[in-house]
Image 1 (spheres, rainbow, N blue to C red):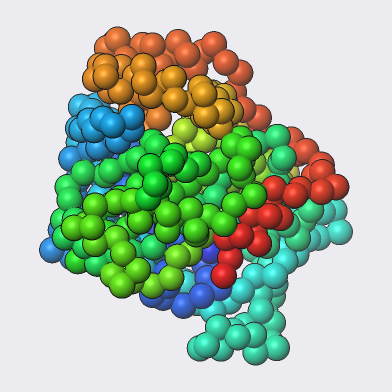
Image 2 (cartoon, rainbow, N blue to C red):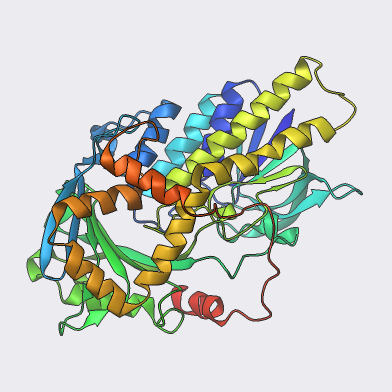
Length: 451
């Protein structure tokens, strides 16, 4: 079985590693060349660290992997520090690692297992057979400056994995639209030279005070990178009435202008420009399986509506997809299926979507309700004033938001979260929703975020 993966980010490289390690022929097409930057908070929760451990990817602090103890939450004039919970299935530490280094190390890890990674191959469309099954992709070849050379190359495969992010040319070329009934976020971030670069907590601001003390829309973060800089950014959801109407970069400037001067979050200390990206949440592109094609990570909208976390879900979806493909390849080799037909393999791979839904569908349903609530300032203010003074409640909230629960555990918090997820239907990821004729919020987002 031959597999093509579009995109060498966390999802694509993770899937490539598992497939290559199992002896499956796999090629990854990456539109840029490494090292390359990605807009991200650079924070990895224990859920993401677990996936790094499963990959066997070394992450020593001496090589830029900065460990942290947990979350520091700031709101309503209060600051609380919440260590990562002790959960049997997860490590008790998080990491800060810039995507500049993280993505390249993942790609090289996949190569070391035998995957072929072709850089400067920008996939423009998926290729299909007469019956509509995806059979490969077409890629534009880029030069060393990232410009199109005018040459293209077609690649054929038994299975294609779309791991090409929110913009996913692969899925878009097949007419698989974004869903306007699912949450969407926008994040902007930059780096500052700062004495806070060695902070060992992931700091989350649930309210954003400006220089005049007036609250700004959205939530923010300050993550110490450990290399002399801090990653400082903010996000806003489309449940907010301000979504699509603001210059988010200016909001970031106003927020940092109100911070203590000794932190150094000033224009003269800024390293690089302010950059932004969309956060596709709650399965906002479906179906996750079409004959010959599986959507992974951001391409399938697998970002948590609770906290904007996407890396862990990208890597997990990659592990799930690789597992189904490896099993299908083994059955083919064993002669369990008709080798002249794709129907048996397709039926098996179609189970991927249901498996993903079973893993996170109910969690994402709760997250969608949460996203709708926090978009209302009065509700958010009341929740913060009620919850921040109660550490035991905030510990529960952190576990829920970060999805750090043990399904087999009998602890009170685990049981409550299980009950909550049982009470709601799982978010669907097998059908599609026709896009609306206009989507002013998303259009405005693109205009405001991009330089």
